[in-house]
Amino acid sequence: MDINIMTTGMVTPAGNDENTIWTNIIGNKTATQLNKKISFTSVVSPGKARKMSRFSQLGLCAAVSSVNNIGDAFAQMDRNRVGAIFTTGYGPLETNLEFAKQMIQDEPDFCSPTVFMNTVHNACLGNIAMELKITGPSTMLLGSNHFMLSKLILEENKADLILAGSIEEYNEELKESLEENGLKSSDIGEASIVFGLARASKDRSDNIKLTEVFSFGLGFNPYEHITVDKVKESRLGDYLKVFFENNQVDAVIINDRTSALGQFEYEFLSDRAAKCIIIDKCNDFFGNVLGCDLGLKLLVAKLCLENNTIPPSLNTKQLQYSCFGKVAVLSTEITGNYSIAVLEK
Image 1 (cartoon, rainbow, N blue to C red):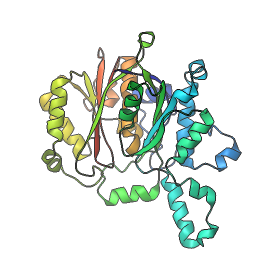
Image 2 (cartoon, rainbow, N blue to C red; image 1 turned 135 degrees about the vertical axis):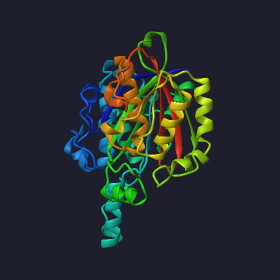
Image 3 (cartoon, helix red, strand yellow; image 1 turned 60 degrees about the vertical axis):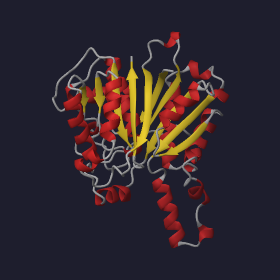
């Protein structure tokens, strides 16, 4: 079953709405808010904000933005059939480190209960559910493909709308750790992005559709120092071969080419899918957004499909392409989870 993208909401280094992001991409205005916390406006009162972690506020801001973008359609929905399926690579890391410092420096009895309750990944979804008054299927995944679970829930008619989101909060200690372990792309971007997904229907024929999404394990941590030879030793080439033999796509968004995975994907596609347009410069606009990688790549695919354009700024060849209708996205997670998703118009 095809799934419609009804709406999106986001907080990213390239902008906090689709128009700003697309303007920056076509104008080749690369991200400046990398390796730091980005600014966004809280969507709750100061009193509520004090009880939430910044991680939760990032997710809530994107979720509220996504439902605001569909206006009356959301207001008329049965909130019992609206759910939220989110994922993250590292969760509320700032909050967890703050709690750890309190535990080390003070007696446990003096630790902040507000900080403690926000160390749980799912606290974010609790805040989203309460603010939007939704009671459908909801959970927070860790380094997993939230689009797969969202699609399954919709296919089984267990919800009418799923807010499929991802959040990654910037943390300086994490950045240093990733660099020490061999991550070449040191420009880390924080982000939160939410897609409102619903079952495809005739009255939604103009929506961009999520037609394919699946994942498999690579058998190694993609953020550690790995070589192209190590990637070749895995079964990634076999999976990609089967996928591209059975799916005709016009363009594909790959991993950053500073990584061994990105290099392997580029070489593979250049040899076996010569007619396929390779989009390899998403990181120029968002940085390495870790657990938000799949979501932000799908956002770029959506914008390219809606505008019928792949700008020169998104590909190494610096060429502009048009007249296409199907884009594949390749993405990876800290857990070694590798995902492939396809959008069509």
